Length: 88
Image 1: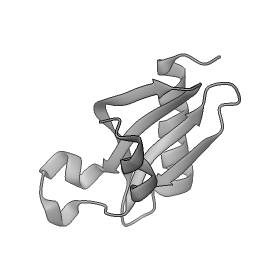
Image 2: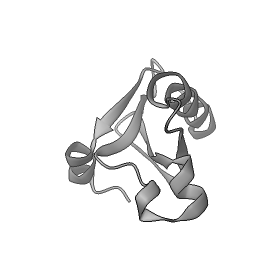
Image 3: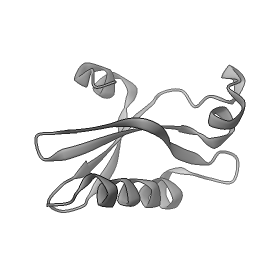
Image 4: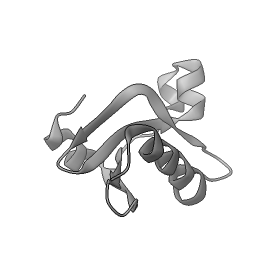
């Protein structure tokens, strides 16, 4: 079973590899993380928004990064799916 820090590292690597692109880089939101049912959840947002706080820099429609605690598999959840978990 992964620990929180290992899962966070995998989540950021997933964002760098699979979600970020030249027009918008993504990062984990500091302190917005949870573990439930063998899975780790991390809120993420565009780097530009995290730096500026300007809503025009915000990524919309994305949800949490979910990391399976056993396999390390990562996926980006949708906003609605994430909201239903009510973690943060």
